[in-house]
Image (tube, rainbow, N blue to C red; front, side, top):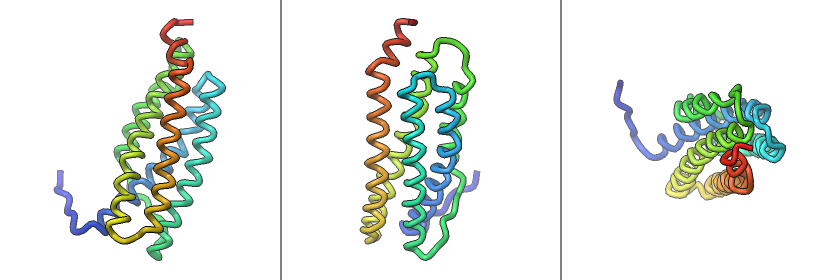
Length: 168
């Protein structure tokens, strides 16, 4: 494997923006499939709402790219591809509906945690580079990702995991 060269923070910031831009598009493709696979109406609704939110997050990233005078560009996000591929194992799963929903929540939370890590880093890079306006946009998305993670935890804790544990 060829070694990567990191010349400066600005270049790293741009590459990471391209990476998360691709990740968000992968998520947009995956969320309808997750909604369809979910059994709980609350979980279906959470996936629907997160898709709408993800569309807004892509628009924010478009704004970040525009502020550089560049068109938004995607660089394949291998990390997200792997997370989505792993989670897709449950899309056509057979068995206990609550256990399948628990698996979908776990897969979705892996994605959220990845996004939280990336957006936290991007926000910090933007601040270090003096791009306060971009940092605000990235912080807005970071806050939404954290809220989504909390909502998924609440769904799991409020019933789905208990139902799956009882086998009802």
